[in-house]
Amino acid sequence: MKRIEETMTLIGHLTELRARIWRIFAVFLAAMGGGLYLSPKVLHYLKSVPPGSKMTWNVFSPWDGIRMYMTVAVVFALAVSLPFLLYQLWGFVRQGLHPDERSAALRYVPYSIICFLTGLAFGYFVVFPMSFAFTSRITRSMQLVETYGVAQYFGFMCNIIIPLAVAFELPVVVMFLTKIGLLTPKALHKMRRYAYLILVIVASLISPPELISHMMVFIPLVLLYEISVLLSRFVYGRKKSAVLVENAGA
View 1 (cartoon, one colour):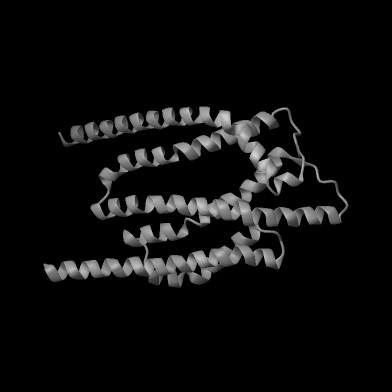
View 2: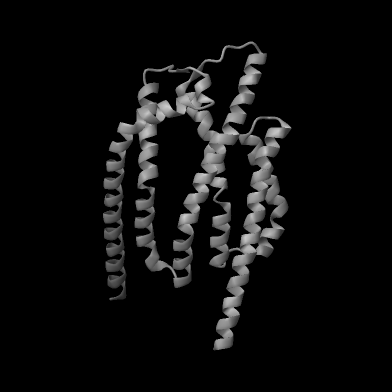
């Protein structure tokens, strides 16, 4: 009997999951239609602002144009449908979370979106122009002709701004993990030297190979880590205070 109930519960979860996936797919398709309409305008905007305005984009394959057209449309559709996707995901997993975990996850979702957008802006308006200017300077010093394919240009750009956008999620992730008890300020303190080493590697991979550029990327990453430590201490302190008050009341 117990096995039958477990099977029925599993089937119910799978049915709910399928329904939510279909809803997400429908919203994504609708957003994709808007992305197909706006894709040429987005490409024109990216081409009109530095460093895109300093070059002529070329295609080296008959598929490059349609590939970039569809890529921009898909990215736009993902960005627009992301809030609905998170809402559906939250609706599916919230039943298996404790009340504290539910409130923490729901509270930190808006901050995670803000941090991600901030990381994208920092990567696109600060690190990407700096990296592109460095590579262009090296190219001209070697008396080479700068001929860039649009696919290569966007690949270079995404390899820089996407890791930074993900890195800017660090404070929110640390706060959430501290809130649910999987991370403590003491653990972050012990991991500091290893974290700095990882940040040095990340900064060297996504910035031009020169000291000033490395520091311009490394310093914000270190600040993010230290802010994460402070936020972890704050969340951990509030959590301990709440436990003490609860025990005193009992």
